[in-house]
Length: 339
Ligand code: AMP
Ligand code: MG
Image 1 (cartoon, rainbow, N blue to C red):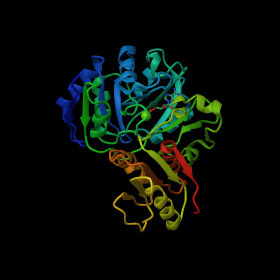
Image 2 (image 1 turned 90 degrees about the horizontal axis):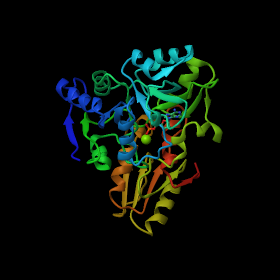
Image 3 (image 1 turned 60 degrees about the horizontal axis):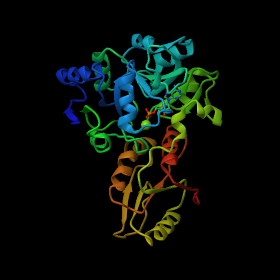
Image 4 (image 1 turned 90 degrees about the vertical axis):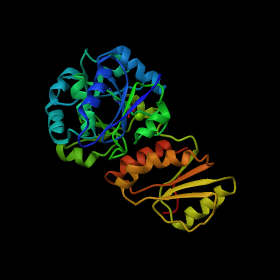
C-alpha cells in the first residue's frame, strides 16, 4: 500500500487536505494525524473493520484498548453514557487538552476499541488539524499513538512514516507535536477516580478540581488499563535510566559502558568526557524540555546502533512524574545513583 503524506499548516490547515483525509476515515481507512501530545493513528471508532486495521498496522496486542477522540461535547454523547457531574467539570476545565477520561461505553463504539472492557477512553485533542479532521469526518476517531507497537511514540510525521509507512493510507504532517508524551488517563468509573497513566495534566491539577484522586497502585487497577502492562515506549538498544546522580557517578558509569562499545547519553548534567564513541545530548532540566524531545532523541540515538543508551532522570514532582513514568518504561535497567 502506498502511504500519502500531506503537508499542512498547523495554524490554518488546508480545507481540501482535511476533506480528503476525512473521506478516507469515512471510507474505513487509516489516517495518521498530529495531536498536541503525539501523532495518532486514526480510524472510524464506530466501524469494527476499520479498527481491526489499526491493530494490524501497529502489530498491537488485541487486549490493549484505544483512545477515542471527539471534536465537541455533542460527539461525546455518541461514545459514552452516564457521564457524571465530576466528569463534566473536568471536561469543562481541561478539554480540549491532554486528559483522557475512562467512562461507560456506548454500544455504537466498535467492540475492539475497548478490547472487551465495558468502558471507553475518550478525549478532545487540542490541535487544529486533529479537531478539523474529526469534525469533517463526522464520526468519533479511535487513535492510539501512530508507532509500531512497543516503539517510542511518534512526535513527527517522519517517525510515523518510519514505523508504519506503507501500512496506512495517509499521514497528515503538521510538524512536531508540542507536548511530546501521551495524555493522562483517568478512570472516572470508580470513586475516587484513579490515574491509570500519568501525563501532562497532573494529579495535583486533577485533585484541585475533584478533591480526591488516586494513582493506580494495585495490579487489579492496572488490569483495567491493559496498555500499561505491556513493555512500552522503548527503542531497540538497551536503555539504562539513572534516577539521580552526581556528574562523577555518571562519568564513571559511562567509562564502564564505553569499554564494550559506543554509548549514547541523554542528560541535563554536562558530563566532562570526550570520547568519539560517546554521543551526548544535553537537555534543559525541565519536564517540558524532556517531554518534548525524549522520544525523538531516543529514536535518533537508536539509529546509531549503540550498545547502551544512558538517560539521566529528572525531578518527579508535577509534570516530572509523567516523564519519569515513560523513562522507566523505556528502560531495561534502572540505577538509583548517588544523588
Ligand atoms: P495509546 O493511545 O497508544 O497511548 O494507548 C492508549 C492507552 O489508554 C492504552 O494503553 C490503555 O492503557 C488506555 N486505555 C484505553 N482505553 C481504556 C479503557 N477503556 N480503560 C482503561 N484504559 C484504557
Ligand atoms: Mg501508544
